Structures are given as C-alpha cells and as structure tokens.
Length: 67
Image (cartoon, rainbow, N blue to C red; front, side, top):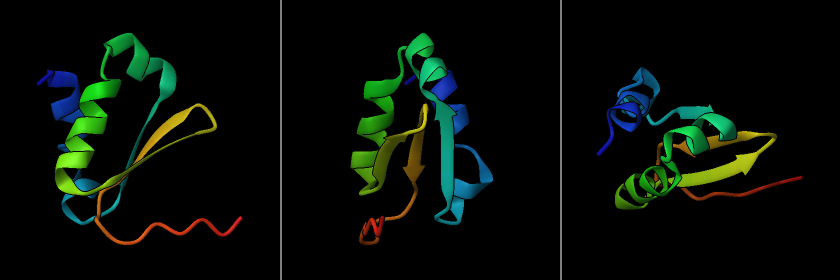
C-alpha cells in the first residue's frame, strides 16, 4: 500500500462513514487508482468519478443517484 493512499484513508471522514475525494490528476500522478478502488471494494464502499474528482463514499449503504 502506498503512503499517499494510506494518508487519504486516514482522513477523519473515513472513520465516520463520510466522503473523501481527490482530484483525478493527483490519483493518476500517484498511480493510485487501482489501490483506491481495491481498498473501497474491500470495505464495501463506493467509488465515483465526477467533475475531475475521485469520490469515495466510506460506507456500505445503498447508492441511489437521483439526477
């Protein structure tokens, strides 16, 4: 695991089932996309790419997109 991804998932929001996000460019520069997706899958979380951001919903609840 990379220290960069470890730091991302050490954010306080992760512990409370919140949201963490990083720019797509930063994720690509760090070569971290596959690791982020795998960590999310391991925890039953959701990963969304939108608006130049990688967004991780740090909970296993249902994902419903309304618009």
